[in-house]
Every structure is written in structure tokens, then in C-alpha cells.
Length: 429
Image (cartoon, rainbow, N blue to C red):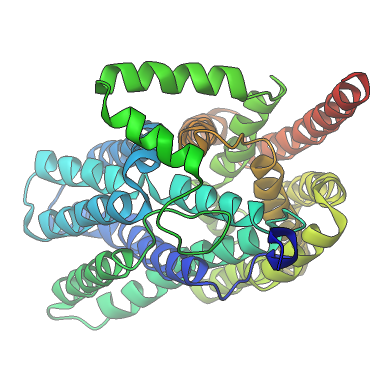
């Protein structure tokens, strides 16, 4: 049978790599969501008596560690493979959770949060690189459904983690200790699962250990040169092979910036402007996040069939409209409609956006390029909350959502320009 005939039409969502990464992403986001959303803010302030400023600084270190080490971890992954990159990094999460359990000072907790961020940094470069390489072994080269599946795992972990931890903390007694031990157990399971990851993915199989002969030769050659020379060659290869529109770089920042604008104020807005009860707020989260999670895989499969452009255009416009609507509503039923529309828009955007980025990544140094892309994207997540807080305090409570809607319109325009310029390049080449 020829190579082309042996190729699958689409990435199998039940392939070992996808299933393993699904479990890893779910559990890592479960641990992170539990710590950052539910457990640490209460534990650090109420139990350890630390100020809110210290809590914010510790969280900033977590985001900083995650973003700063994404590109280096992608570079390391290209050299030692998925298995050992992920296993080594995920061990740091285990260390970080262990440190948090016994930490009593702001310095120790801040260092633990930094280590947690470093430990999570290879997660998305590795999964995006793996899916991109798996897509290269299919006839269509499409990755929308697989991207939707991993985004679903991420959102599910982030949502379920705080719910479980809140339940454990409501039990009284040694509730904090029990919650921490549960998270420690999850971190240990993640390390074990990482040991089953392939070393590398080749075009001929999901768990092939060695890539093509050119990749093998490159790996042998890299062993003979110094790390500094290897980094120089990597940077040169990235510069020469990465042929993307310059407009992609601000688009990467803005995509996460739009989310970062909403994240720190959505709870405050629901309480102060909509006057919802805790149960009503949980229903709001389900209306938005639940719809997103349920729609991600179907949307991803449609992205594989139809392409990314239609979904991104509709998603950006729908997100802009629904966010602007949410910023103005004060009637709860209308707020539910606005939140549901936001959820639908993100179900359209997330798999299509990741599949769109996958097409921009060159075959050489995929891990490094994905790390670069995700670092730029993550910087928007760092900047968004800072600006959001100032807008909330000094301009108005609905302004962060209006700003996020404006960013979505900017993304719509940037996407149109990127696609237009790409088509012109193909015509002229």
C-alpha cells in the first residue's frame, strides 16, 4: 500500500497521543484551576494572613513562569522528545503543590507559584506540535477536531477543578489538607501518564520514536555541536522558514488579551451589576462555559470540513456583539442569553484559531515556533487583567467587556487582512 493510501483522512481522536494529552491537559488544568481560582486566594488570605497584593504577585509569577518558558520548552522538546520534556516539567508541578502544602511565608508560596508556571509551560507547545505533526500524516492536514478536543479538556479541567475544591473546602475540619492531597494525587497521576507519551511523532505513525531520516540526521548533527551553536542554528532556521504575515503577531497578543480583559472582573460584574446569588452565578458559568465545552468537538469537525475562515469571521463578530450586549444588560434573563452567545462564539473561535495557527507553523522547529506563538499569545493574558482592573476602577464596570468587544472587532479585521495577503502571495508566487 502506498504512503498516500495509508494516510488517514483526519486525525483520530482516539489515537494514543491524543488520549494521553487529553488526560494530561484535563488534570493539569484541574490542578491549576483549583489552586488559582478556588484554593489559593482563600488559603493565602484567610489561613496564612497574607495580603491581596501578595496573592496577586504570586499569581503573576505563575503566569510569568508559564509564558517565559514556553519557547525554551518547545526548543527542548525538539531535542529530547515529548516524553521526557513533559515528564520533567510535570514533576515540577508535583514539587510546586508539595511546597504549597507546607509553605508558611509569602516568599515560599511565590517561589512555588513560579515553579508551577514553569512546570506547565511545555504543555501547550507539546500538544500543539504533536497535533500539527499528526495532521501532517493525514490526507486533509486538518486539525480542527483534535484542537477542539484538547480545548474541551482544558476548559473542563479549569471548570471542574474549582467546583470539586469548593465542595471539599465546605466540609470543614481538615478540608484544606484534603483538597491539597487530592491535587497532589492528580499531579502524581499526570507524571505517570506522561511516561507513556511517545518520544517523537513521525509521518508514518502515531507513536513512532524516530522521525524521517532528515530529522534523524539533524538530531545526530545537533549532538556534535555546542548548545549555544544549536540555539543560533535554531534561530536562523526559524527566521528562514517562518513565512507568516507580520499581522499575525499582534493578532496572537489580542486573542488572549480579549480573554484577559474579562477574566478578573466577570465575577465582580455579576455580583455588583447583576446582583446574582452564588447559585445563579454558577448557572451563568454553565450557560457560557458549558455550551463552549459541548460545542468544541462538533465545531472542530466542521472546521476540518469547511475551513477556518468562516468560523473565525462569524466567531469574532458574534463575540464582539455578545460581549457588548453583556456589558450593557442589567436584566438576568438577557444576561443568560448574552453569556450563551459568548460561549457559542468561543466554541467557533478556539478550534478554528488553533487550526489556523497550525497552518502557519513550518515543518522545521515546530516546537520552538509553537512556543513562540503561545508566548506571544500568553502575554496578552498577562496584560489583560492589569488593564481590566484599571478600567473597572477608573472608567466603568462595563468598560472591560466593551474593550474586549472592540478587540474582537480588531481581530476580525486582522484575520481578513492576513487571509487576503496570504492569497495574494500564492497568486504572485
